[in-house]
Length: 172
Image 1: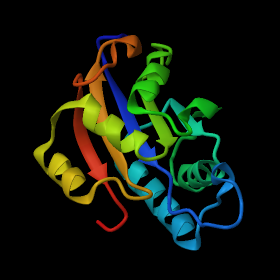
Image 2 (image 1 turned 135 degrees about the horizontal axis):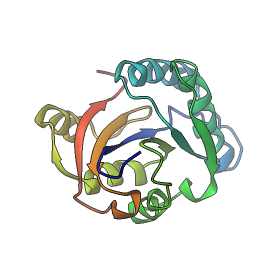
Image 3 (image 1 turned 120 degrees about the vertical axis):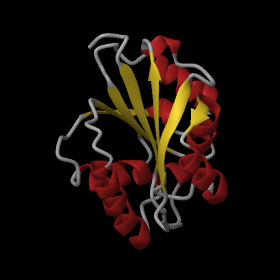
């Protein structure tokens, strides 16, 4: 892939988690979360994007979200379970994305708030007005995702260089 071709990123927040007596990292999905994760997977499939790489937090709820969503996609990307996504700030997530090899065109990152929502806001220097308005109105609830694009190598990803091209949340 040429670095002149647009890169695409999907930022996907894990679905609704349950609150059993376990550590935060080990919290599983709630029943509603399992349903919403599959619906989000269908919506991601409808976006027309084919993901080359999935970067998923090691937390139980993110792994379960991805497992349910990926079954809805026509193509299963290589998945890397990355500890650094759990509790990551937007800056830490940018640093992680800067490490993506340039032969990768499209990445999905499955993570947590507030990092994922903050990252979507920080990266989006421009936006489809409808997508921006919906994201501003809805925030980034469980199982929501934002779609962004930018040009250049992954190491050039920084605040303001991307365009928010789509947004979806379960209640839409």
